[in-house]
Amino acid sequence: MRPIAVPLIAALCAACGPNAPPEAPQAAPAPAPAARRHPPPPAEDCRCITICFVRNGQLREVPARYNLRIGELQTVDSLPITTLAPLTGEYASVAGWYVNREPIRFRGRPYARYGFPRVLAIPEITKVGEYRGVGVYAEAADTASAARVVYLPTRPGCEFQPYTAAANE
Image 1 (cartoon, rainbow, N blue to C red):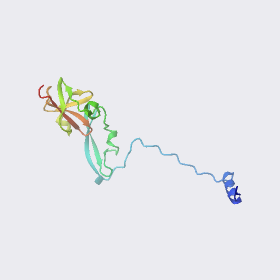
Image 2: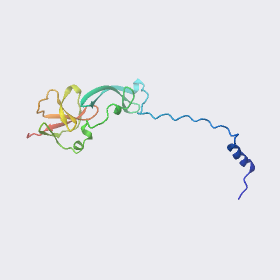
Image 3: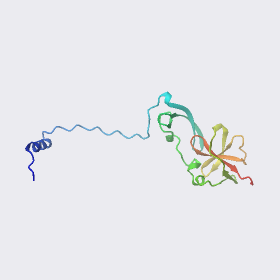
Image 4: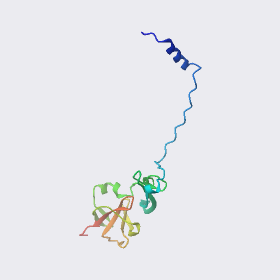
């Protein structure tokens, strides 16, 4: 075994003894934020819009902004829009029957998916019922019980999937 140098032993013992300098107090950790909040972007970094979404079976519109700097749609309080308009069971896109492209039956008639989802303005459509917890909408001018085309919301932003009635019904 090699002998340890005396100055090294003295330095180690001094650090453990009563003459050791006091440790600096550590700051308490900051609490984690509930949602990722970004500072409001400069005016040139955002586009102000309104966002449409379904909440408690009703279509609603709120002001929002698209932050170009980080590529995120945000509330006017700079929170991600998903805090205000989450993708819930009120949207067809989270349902297995929608994902599997199954036809629906509404008011006793079969309807099949038609084309791609489209964005519709709130005044263009009227709620005419529900299918498995998802609102069913028809064009405001076509709210008769036998609407040829109905629309189901697929995601926030007033995106609706059209469904057409079967031709032989």
